[in-house]
Image (tube, rainbow, N blue to C red; front, side, top):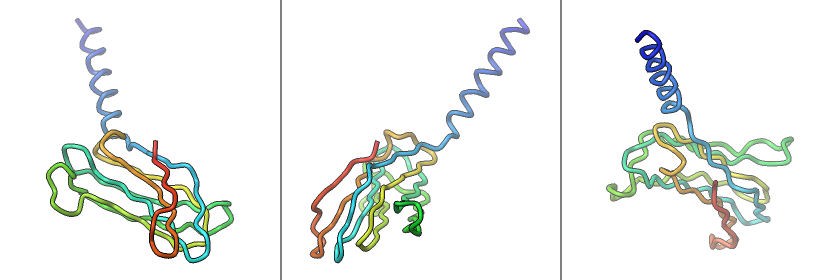
Amino acid sequence: MLLRAGMAMVLVVATWGVALADAVLITPGIRAGTGGALSCTAINVGARPVDVVVTLVNYPPSLAGSGSAICNGLPSARTANTGAVCVRGFSGPTEAFCRVTVTGGGKNSIRAVLSALDPTGTAVNSLYAE
């Protein structure tokens, strides 16, 4: 009986730890030329609000980072009329990848894409996060 209670406690603690872990999605890297830009967009497709941090990470690593967008309580696109999107952009020339960190939901609750934009703002290449 004591062994079963101990195993149940371990299972509860292990499950709790997994539930609190952040999910991270990362795109491949892409380049934006002079006059262009990069835009990383994350959309909450899950059933409930989540906290999302969208970060453009420049490379080579010696370059300064291009920053993050922090979107706490990002509503679900299933029910929201506006605001279910978190975006971080950066002007070219630059090379970067996008890292999306999700708290309160798993990888399946977010769709994310990194797009290279030409000087008119038209997407010329898009890479999806995994």
